[in-house]
Image 1: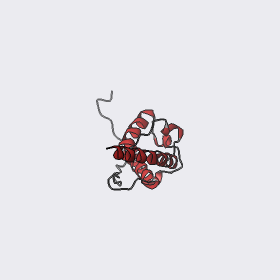
Image 2 (image 1 turned 135 degrees about the horizontal axis):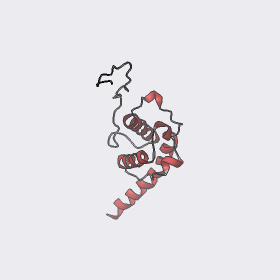
Image 3 (image 1 turned 60 degrees about the horizontal axis):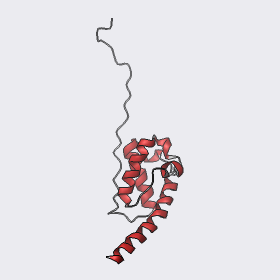
Image 4 (image 1 turned 45 degrees about the vertical axis):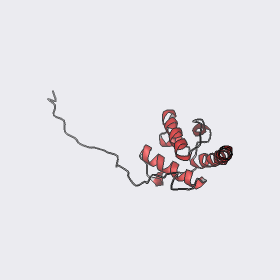
Length: 121
């Protein structure tokens, strides 16, 4: 019997990563670059990764983003930039570069809707 007496012979812990800053839509102009930066920081924070581990042309699913995490990402990015992404975007256009490009395609149409709504008021 072991009698609750086991010795630790090896131990591994993942280092906590805190070298990111949150990007806010209030502090940045919405651009392809700001969307890319926000996505990188989101992956760093939520998937506990380092910036140098993130490739802009790599499928974001390779960073451990599953369908449930993609729903969270969709919600967060839509709130951050003020326009709706559909969760399928993360499956169909699954790189940071692809998502940023898609986001900029949504953004001008969202800006035009807001401008037209302001004209009606």
